[in-house]
Image 1 (cartoon, rainbow, N blue to C red):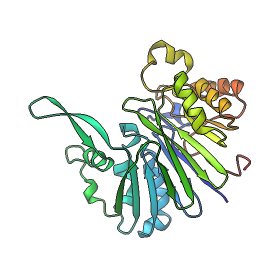
Image 2 (cartoon, one colour):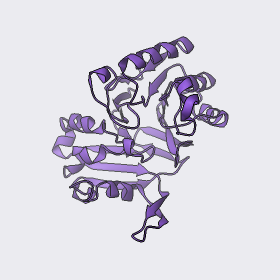
Image 3 (tube, one colour):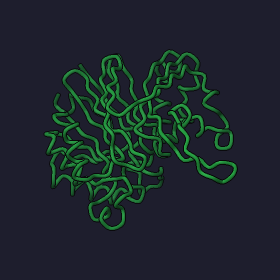
Length: 293
């Protein structure tokens, strides 16, 4: 049974452009998973726009597509591509959207903060308010189905099983373990390491065939002013891969200040620690067979 993956966005925090970013790309997080029966997207950063263009060449262009979109969390670099995802505007397409319901601080007209409850549907709607964007989510003509996603919940999506885990990040995020038959892959963006987090993630990822992990900072960058920012390093991701007996490690969520030259050097450092480390460029795709399974 084949499962295919493609990274449509691997940049963190904010998209970047320029010749110095041409090798690894500048689009923010979007990860596509496909089997014979299921199409799944994790996060709708700016990379989802190009995914949408690719899907329009298939059944989604005729309004006959079905897709699941999971959100790790709703910080802007993980949702800002959603208004530009054209399959959502085509009648007949069936789009299932999953995200957590969270408590958020909102400024009232009186200038006071109050706590409100926002579902994933409300969060995406508010991003497309007319103050910010000309087309509301209510103008999206596809059949949109919104689902509350809770940490620890197991989703059965046709021939995929998706497990979730709470990660340490401001207002927290979710990590996902995607299983197809005997093959599993863990996608873990936007997480800050700690001894407890490393142990928790290692147990969650135990025996997986691959791990994609937030490697935004170098260890020295993290120690020199990035503690508490909600991100991690390649070194701590490799610790998890080793503890969990994972043979393949992917570095993702590249810092917007890290150009191609810097990322090349990080790739070399990671390989010295763990030979099957790979710093992911935008657009990279692979299958379970490519990883030897």
